[in-house]
Length: 215
Image (cartoon, rainbow, N blue to C red; front, side):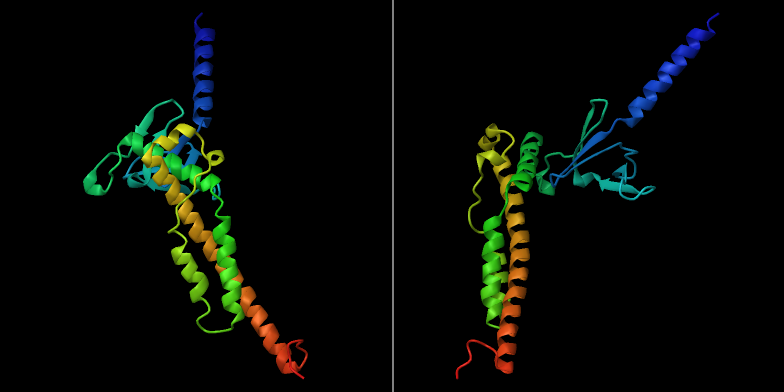
């Protein structure tokens, strides 16, 4: 008499569990990166999720790498705590804004000036053909983090975030990191072009086909 009802309840619970298991959790890291995947476990001091790029393998995030895990159920598990002994000077809310700054800086800041500036330095230095030519573009790399970071309003997710020093520090951190990466790329490519130009001119001089050769 009650079997159909029991079967219905069983099937309902089974379908609910399947649907819930397919929902993904949101893992927010301290460096601003976000992973959206189902958490497998939180044992042995790490949060474990599947590795989509390598089936059958897992990714482990140690607790000190994590700011928060927002589960699909709505529960939020915070791993960051303010502790000056560990260097965690920000409160939990301030750290959230710092991370948002990192995310916006990583997404919105372009660092084109560093790319082209280091590239020009590399070309000019490489064209001299000297052994010390790399000092100029890589010296530019070392100094590119000094100038003030200009935060454009169209690169931020919420204008109110600019009222927070923590947000600004997070944005500047990402922006300076992108400056260094773009400077490294631009300087290396420019240096290769400069050396290429130098050896092309030297080769043409040796072969006597250079337009700069005196008659």
